[in-house]
Amino acid sequence: MKQSKLQSTRIAIILACIILIVFSVLATVFAVEVISNKSGKTTYEKLGDTEIRMLESLQAYLTENGMTLDKPVAFVKNSGAFRGRAYIFNVGITEHKLNYGLNGGTYATEILLPDEYKLPTMYRCCAFAPDLGSLLFPSDYDKVKLCDKDVYVIAFDEESLNDGNFTTLLDRMFGKE
Image (cartoon, rainbow, N blue to C red; front, top):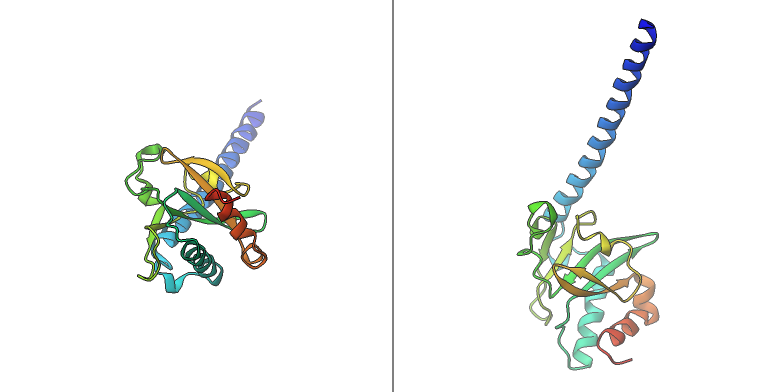
């Protein structure tokens, strides 16, 4: 009887340790993602080629059509099975309190754009931010609720920028289709 109780205690301790290790790993990944989003590549020049092409395509579209970007929109980089980080316009995310009492700015970083771009303030959102999870698995041209606003979501990748699908989605967002 004493042996059985000792064995049950050992199993409980081992399970508790495994749970603690898994939780620690997840917390570390989350923290690294938040820190890298806040500290890395916060200017236009440091963005990836696909993100720069998306911004160039967006600016060219707006210029050609004599429009301004006045709708809340999130451009989400498509990275295969998962979506990458979201680039959000016309959503005052830094003032908004997300769940857990944390400021939305904890999970968002303003990206400084060149003056020749006539775009509103752009924020890059952390991939694992609470309440921003709806941006991880959107289908093209969904609307999601973000900071109490209906936000258009447009996915982009190299292929959509090359084949015209990105422009088609912009046409839909601006009601041209």
